[in-house]
Image (tube, rainbow over all chains, first blue to last red; front, side, top):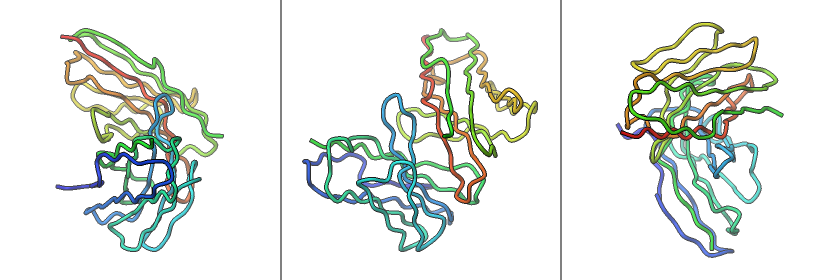
Amino acid sequence: NAGVTQTPKFRVLKTGQSMTLLCAQDMNHEYMYWYRQDPGMGLRLIHYSVGEGTTAKGEVPDGYNVSRLKKQNFLLGLESAAPSQTSVYFCASSYGLYQPQHFGDGTRLSIL
Amino acid sequence: EDKVVQSPLSLVVHEGDTVTLNCSYEVTNFRSLLWYKQEKKAPTFLFMLTSSGIEKKSGRLSSILDKKELFSILNITATQTGDSAIYLCAVGDGTSYGKLTFGQGTILTVHP
């Protein structure tokens, strides 16, 4: 019962470095989402995908890019990391449009 | 702009107490309201409510929605230390991608 798996779990970057966060789900879900969670601000949507090969911007997309080349994977990229991107990143997926979203365990990212 | 506000932001109780967590919302095109429990890692789904006045129940947890007054409550009876967590409220609207707007969360601490 893997569900939604995120890698890595922790990462420390220097300003200007790039990296990719990987999200994999084994539930055959169509919809996938990337959120960031900051203290006092709840979860905010970065990008989302409604199916393989599709991506779209969410509430806070600046500084991030995504790709969904395979249905089960959703990648989040930071091209040039900034300290403001220090956060906990969560990936989620759902089976249908109005079904509950299921979350991964998160990636704690620190940008120095 | 869609808005979800939870109260209180934090709560400290003793085992055996009953707690009520509140969630109020302003959403253009309401579809559903969801409650999640977040311990150290992934938010885990508790309830999804779509109709007013119908209580959803799971063990010691229950929740109800009032669509006229635009709020929901989550009740936990006979609290246990394992109930200590952040409780997140999210509202789904009728967009084409299942958008969820999250509240800031309520931090519940249950002391033995």
